[in-house]
Image (cartoon, rainbow, N blue to C red):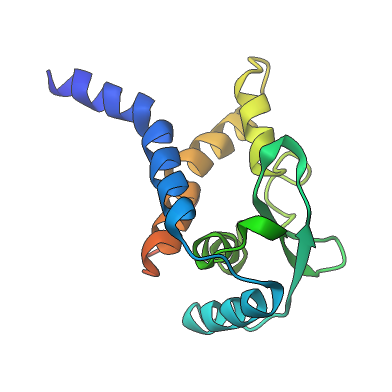
Length: 162
């Protein structure tokens, strides 16, 4: 019975997290660009992250995404966000990925792309083991850590790759 419960929870985890994220996003107050920059600076201080982060604001993003975070090849950190979706929760989530090194290009080089790439990878059965291992680690550790921080502001011990 316990095995079935664990299996059911692991299968439904993405739906549960998406529901929580959507609910929090829906009830969270929206911020303008000036407020967003202030939020980023406040959250950077909490995470003891001192590098500059650029804020790129868009009318929309591909695939219905609300935000992304990255480190460009020139070393520049960026949080990109849809203008009508800027909230502290969303900015916290993306900043956490930056502060914890999740966006470094050294991770799987070109294989680690935006979150929407993971969905396309999951539908492809011909993945090398390194990519499969990273996707599992991302789904089970990296993303839940960023979610927890975005919802609560609690900086838990970040998971390490195996």
